[in-house]
Length: 346
Image (cartoon, rainbow, N blue to C red):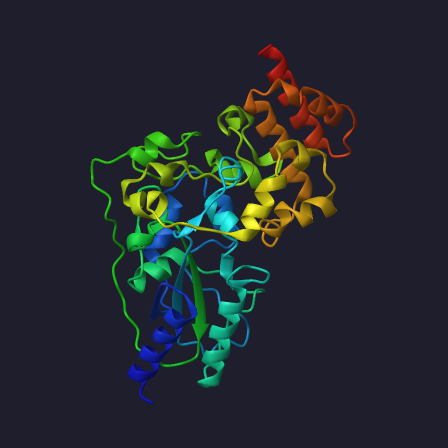
């Protein structure tokens, strides 16, 4: 089989398994990515932590030749109204990186097995991967950028997850320039951001981002943002909801309900997150969040903040109890803040 035939067969196999797009591109660095990162205020800690325009290969990967980029979509899913105010759709989708127990884990395993059957070695062990995923998918011609910093792929909009697999095969590669299809005068995403985390050029201010404030410890956060986090405990969809390019992906017909999400929606409450045990969380929201974010007490802190922003004074007793007795300092502090905010509204 020629390189061209093998490349075509790989792309066809990816689509057969359920990926919506597949492409192959080079491992060359992205100097423009590094230039952009260095120009953005607040990104120093991320660049220092390994975020850069290089595909960081593991030891023993000297034979790596190119990267296969695949796109998963959750645009056809129906997301429960009980969960979407609190958890962004991408995190509900549980599609990240093909990592078990993600919902695309079996698909990912089968794709790797197919590549191995073709005599192709893959370098996607979880202990090394540091790749600019969106930049790779853009170079492969699979996505364009939105002003909100998200990747977009045709009718699937920004409701996508990118999985990149480095291989040792001499496949046919494509190299496309980065592009955006956002109208020059559109700023709907910028105006929709609840924490004003996008500047006038659409550059993300990471410390104001909802997800940043959900994931990082209190010492790294600007607490003045708390009031603007609303009831979100893991991520935010507001800029994507406001984007005209997502009209079909988010608001189109024929959405399919997901049994796991429907099950979780039946038992979800902010109070249950705050007061529950780690084992209870693992049996509920942990089934969609914990594979990539395991800081249990931080979820509880986020629930306390969301309760304070909810306007629901019925939460006050639970918050006061947590403020007085919780073993975790961040949970106590957040619960105290939330209780005082709710009592001030009485």
